[in-house]
Image (cartoon, rainbow, N blue to C red; front, side, top):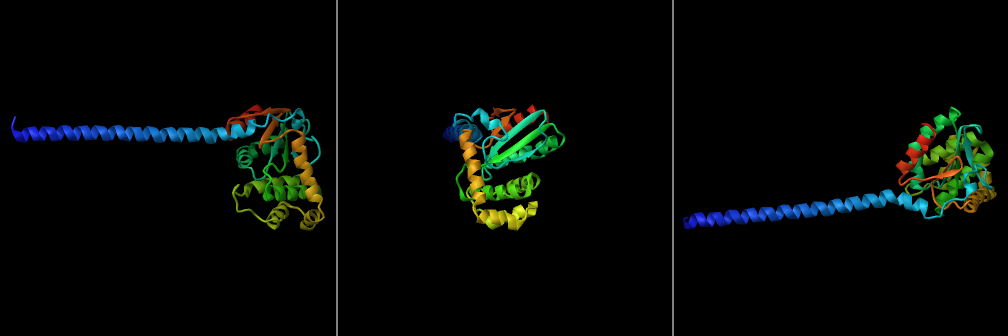
Length: 243
């Protein structure tokens, strides 16, 4: 073999070795990234399950639509085949996701008389927005009734802010109540005289009394329904009631 041929062979072997090294490095990088992605997916997907299970579970009274004092709104007949109670915080992003995935089906089934659904908002996150939206909701329900309160409930989730803000003002929330059909003067009066705060605080106390410490907490026919993710919880709920 000539010197030139030997040099070329060495060069080819070096190039092949470098290519193999780079291939292995790309594979290690890919596997590392894939591992991080999987880990993040498990953390994010399991975050809901962890948040929903670290409280020790609600008491039996949590499944009672009228448990304790506080403000709630109910749709569907009392003699429906299934009853659902959903404890929620208007700022909770998981509650917002559950609402998106179950709103239409639950409304339809309630209208058909197949399920009675009671929404029980309270201030879990202890933020100004959670408290203000709860107070406006309470004032709306007391002054305008369940139909208008349910419309406000839906509007609050349709316009739900990020958990990190920015947040609507109380006037903005009152405007949603008026859009739902509430009388602005009556709602504002309840806010100004402290009645709305009293009703809102009673709702939060009712959750505490029932040992509801996470949101959303869903009770189906009196028993807590759990899921690893919001998608899982929503699917189990709708499947159980025949959606």
